[in-house]
Length: 205
Image 1 (cartoon, one colour):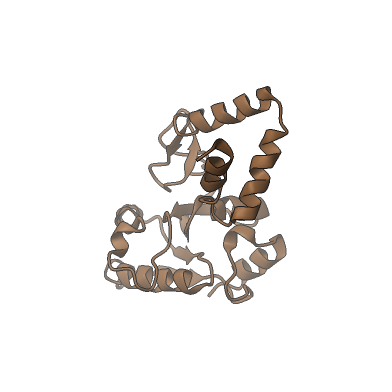
Image 2 (cartoon, one colour):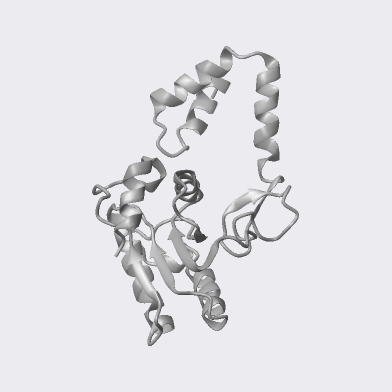
């Protein structure tokens, strides 16, 4: 396999990228100078080494923050007793961009598909339960927001998490809410516009 075909194949492994768009990326790179290609390859090579996962919310963040917690989890001005659960880092980034949520986060790391036989291996459910146990012990939790995409995998994940948390939250005065149905069916949080998310967040239930 030559370099053009190999790179095209690698680009098709990116989410939402098909063969035609992957080929466009390759042709774009062929028009760039060597400095651009070296800069790109170095950024990719150093990506893992320069990043870490937050011990609390499990999002990726830069190691330039000399802490085991990301900048959001270290922010004392945020509402620590409200926790929004999202599927992936891109969802968190989009919600932060909108700017009307000031609580904490937890990144599941994926979805639980309808036919999944080992859901605990697909998402960070055990780490989530550990975090919630600590927050409950510290009396630092009043609401859990399940902010997941309204597609079959997202809704199945909501059901799975709700069932998993029932024993932990029994007899606790902690609300579990989901985003308002202002979201269209099949909507991905990563791509929502500001107004749509603001309405869904405001009308959560």
